[in-house]
Length: 251
Image (cartoon, rainbow, N blue to C red):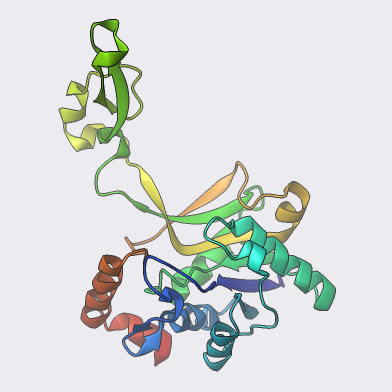
């Protein structure tokens, strides 16, 4: 049987929403929701929180997770990468226990999950050994090919006349009329979300990257990730109006 560890990143010092990883949602720290989903996924063996905060570590333990180490300050900043904290956790596991075969990356900023979907994602990745990783996504309400970027336009070939114009994503020119055709005529596009990522320890250590070039998609319902207070307020609305999440995680 594969050895599977859920790894939950929970650094302190968030700026968009102060202490968002422990902010209370329905009376429970945000972190508790992801810990509960990880504990209730029947194919996860251990649940470990990677944090730089003694307080967060205490809360994680009270919620049933392990927090056996603190993440160094140098990999706990705004610009720190997922690879850094996962590599740090793998180094600790190698030195203190044993390396798991798979890491399940579970972000606390996406708290409304169903444990059975997390377990299904893990099973899907295990069943596809040629994949380098699994990443959860949800379908965008409108194709990204109907969106725009900004492009510089030189009027009269003079820098003084330069201004910004819209440029349809995926086109080389700046004619945007094709963006007006029906959305059904564009390919569906998908947005990565924080529901669940499943990673191969062997791949990470061999390639020094997390996902690689054969990433299995796991399509989930649309989810909200917390970056701003507006996001958090939306989460509060969703959690109050969808009690099945509380039943699935805490009852």
